[in-house]
Length: 245
Image (tube, rainbow, N blue to C red; front, top):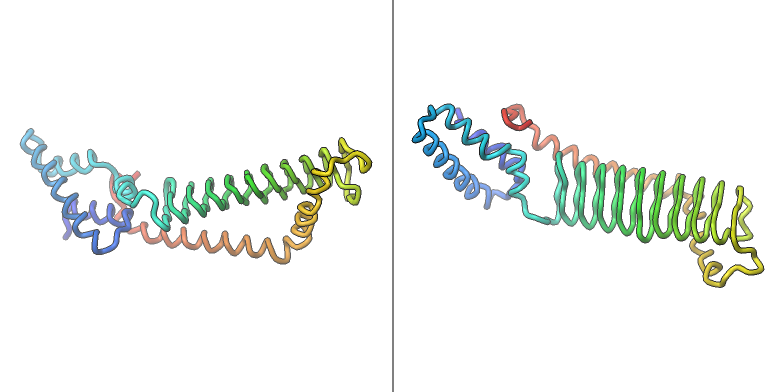
């Protein structure tokens, strides 16, 4: 039967997710450190069994230690808890070039709350583009859209189209809902007129969202969710560590 320290280190290395070439050397380094700590506690008069438990408690939970031992910004970081950080980051919270999580921050971000250059989610802030229930950013397509170019159920922007459209300019071709605009077709500045092709792209997106974009979005979310599920299964073992709470 494995010792308590070996069981603890098994859990640490599960979360650390190191290749075999690094795992054994890391295990031995941690084990030497823990055994020295146990010896120090015994020298101080603590019984051996209690000294082992105390050394492990002082060292920290396997989950916390294991995640700390991961590379700072790997190509792929998938976590069951905490914040994933990597080129591709997937977790409850995710920070990366491509990020997916309950809260996601990245160049491309998907999440319940997503912030990025391109973002999609329940709440999405996209510097260039956002697709969401509530969207903020440059080019925004959302139930409630606020942006430079905005389309949605309620759209507010420099240029806007929507069930209710509020903007400096709502193109004269739009007759799909209630319109509140500052400029008329007679005095609209050329700059605002030049943004109309972006609105055409957004309305194209609206027309095709359920036939093309939405299935693709759901496929991405399902795939990333499956990756995270596999990670949760990988780190979930029957021998739940006693200080892992």
